[in-house]
Amino acid sequence: MKLAYLTSLAASLIITTKVYGAANSATAVFAMEDVTNPLILLSTSAGDIYIELLPAEAPRNVANFLALAHGEIEFQDPNSNTSFRPRYFDGMQFHRVIPEFIIQSGSPFFNPLGMPEVLLEDEINANSLGLNQFPAIDIQGNFNSILNIDSEDEFHKVLLEPLFEKMNIKSELEMKERQYEILEILQNLTVQEVYENQGFNYSEDSPTRRITRGIVALANAGPNQNGPEFFIALRDAPWLNGKHTVIGRIVEGIETADAIGNTAIDPLEPSRFATLIYSLRRIN
View (cartoon, rainbow, N blue to C red):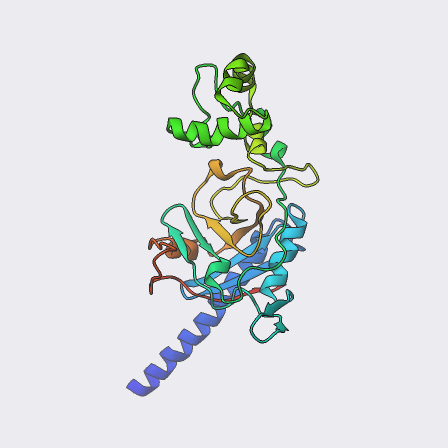
């Protein structure tokens, strides 16, 4: 009797698991903004995440992300002088996790394949984000909160140094001679211009959405440095808008991303608690 009961229970669990998996996929498709967009299944040791990629908003970077995932990018082994096309993300970890903020993976520093030969330019529309409408400094002299300026050092690094470079000011004497010109520029400076002074370039070719909870965007080391590394936002992050190319959005499995984000992971300290990526595939 016990054996029959256990057999029946096991069978029902298997059926339930299969149905649940199918429901996840079906729900993911239902939640897509455009069913012709690529739908990605990100399978991890913490569970599955379904991501709708957004080729209309970042066509080149989305295509590159898919090519890396599917083993269409050629890598060269300098030791054997042979080339191969691996599925880049399989077996990688979420090497950087900041709870209630982001989970991040795909870093070339944590992949024996290293960095792809080609890094892509940003695909960001500053006007879509409203960055051209946000003053960098308000009339009371307060910095816009999305600039994250909390000290005099940050004021110099974020605003003044890039501005002085653009104005070709190379000495304290030149700064004093042009102080009224500098003041006028600062009073009229927008957040978009701050970022442009830092080297970011924008285009109106495609729309760009804000980095909010569930958005998938590319990590970078600065302007136009887009490769395989990506992050998933666990909360709205307006201070990242305009500095990272958005390539997708979670349509199913945000609870899995939250679970991954529960344990802080420092990229400089490898951890056995880091979540593993089993595979990353397009499923439609």
